[in-house]
Image (cartoon, rainbow, N blue to C red; front, side, top):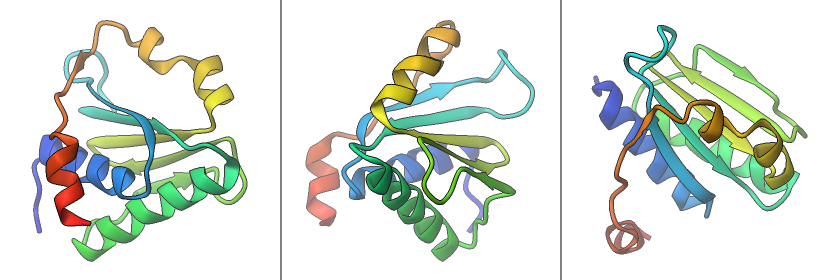
Length: 124
């Protein structure tokens, strides 16, 4: 299934939400960098939760025939990166997210509106 980068980012966000990721944000990086079009940023409550979120994203994308080009930080990391070419996913523990502050670093990036939680809850 060939998804456009924005749709891929939103599907990744839905997968993260399925594992109850916290503070989910999608940043439009087009025009700000050349390595990707979108960042999906979220955090888990613990190291185990971070791994579970990353694994859920990987599993759901794999079901769509989309494999990451590169994965870094699994297992047992405070920051996991999944590189899906046009979309780079960052899953943090809360302290690591605060320390690296990607939203602040890329403050010029537009935030992509996420579907309402109501529609996501209907799928569960």
